[in-house]
Figure: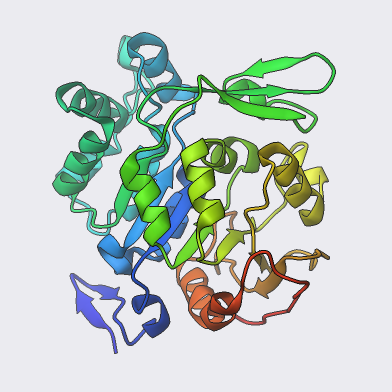
Length: 330
């Protein structure tokens, strides 16, 4: 049975007893994909943690980084926006984008608010905590790092691409991908991974949204050492560009070559795409598409798929043997 609050159906333990039984779920990624995952599981409140990429170099975020320095706030802002369940004046202002305002044009006010809070806070993490409290966002959000860094890629032909915008524009897969300078994760983020009973690698851009998190040594080591199932959530459609030309098996091989470790035990794959053939990783296929269409996972279907697959996921040990299954009708 569900409760109704302000006209919105609220998820209760009776809706997702398996997910509610977990002490913690930790998801890693970038703004749009990770935000959708977090909003899907927001009923878990403070037992849900999102660790967010901070290497964005485009748009309002890039302009702020160029002028004021600091970490990239855009993906954190996007996740916060997707976790707001009841619109308020504060949330409307947080999402406001200036138009016809001179140098402020196209700046998102939420990015500027986070910049201001960062400048009056001891740590960027504290700035995020302040805005969460202001907007009543109960899931925990943490930047992947609290010091600025740049995503850098090499193409194998002598080309070097610096910044997310440049890396995203590559027409080949990077042969080397790293952060410059190297950065440390907040200790709270490392602890959240260690304590989680389910780790989710969110959909979105593999190279510019998910991989920056995994390139942080502290986070990668914590994921490697975790006993929780490590689950990659596949995109509803193939990514544009070089990534989309690779099969799932090839993407996983590329990740392992870049990171020098395998961090994926299972993949939840949308039934809108052909079932991939992958060795040594469990593949579960589920209906994740919104009824109205689009590129973003349906929130309720994603939560339902995780709930139903949880018993199988809990049995996974890594490294695992070949275990490919088809799961219908999430």
